[in-house]
Image (tube, rainbow, N blue to C red; front, side, top):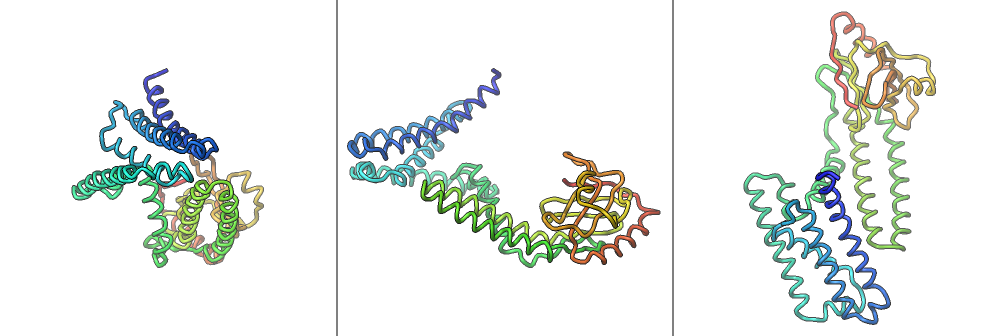
Amino acid sequence: MSAFDTVLSRRTLATLAPPFAVAAALSLAASGWAAANPGLAAILLCWIVADALALGTIAKHEARRPGAKALLGAFALAILVLLIRPRGPVRDAIMGVPAVPLALGLTIFAYLGWSGRKAWQVRRGGGSMEDALAQILPRPLVALALAEARVLHLALLSWRRPTDVPEGATGFAYHRYLAPMLWVLLALMIIEAMVVHLLVALWNAWAALILSIMSLALVGWFILFLRSLKRHPVCVDARGLTWPIGSMRSLTIPWRQVVGVRAEWTLAELRAAGLFNGGLIAHPNIVVELDPPVQTRRRSIRFLAHRLDEPSDFVAAFSAWNVAASSSFSPRLDMKD
């Protein structure tokens, strides 16, 4: 085994082992034996949780010297687990010693004060918000939280952003037909998520909470995508065609690859030849043939399809631009897939 594989295996074990150890200790603390022996169960729980998180922090560090701040963070996390999760006699045993709640509170306060000071220094020195918050919370968690905050901001506060149509181009909307279908799909997704949440909550409240957070993130992304349908129309200009699916995906095709608008077709034929359908779940009303096909990382695309709100206007503009560009313009291919 190489040194890289050894480090990777150690980090993987250090990441996965502590949660399993904590979960096992919490299960033991909820057992009948713990109810009969709350003092001993409380000592075992505190020892296993603190030891597992601290050893995991040490093992994940390359030199196995994570520093005092990282260890203090591990102990603060252990204390949060001990304050929130135990129930019944075990919790009473932990909180029954007057010095224990004081020690727990001081540990959390010390970590927040230390890491908060570090975050303020990073921010004052010109560091990003992500770098500053990463002094308090794990960076992957910070990155995820900031990404979700940006999604919610765009989804809820960017309703009046103008459409993205380059200067000199003509844009053709497709959201008036497609968006209502996707809003209905979103409503069904929310109803299904609520039902699943209630069922999971009967089994485990924490699992239901995690599932709810993931569902909210998905709903936020879906709303952002629905808003992007209006902001990113199909565009025709002197360079060629821009064929988007909202902000999710887009192709830009030069005129030298465009054959024309296909009048007769079947979906089976288009899919067999290679289809990029911007209409998603809607039946297309515009099909454009390409030759040579567009080569993406995954497949070859010979046909572009979409469900435009005004297909006749697109055909007229397409014909005018195609004739004007065919004799003198030789653009490059600029493709995103």
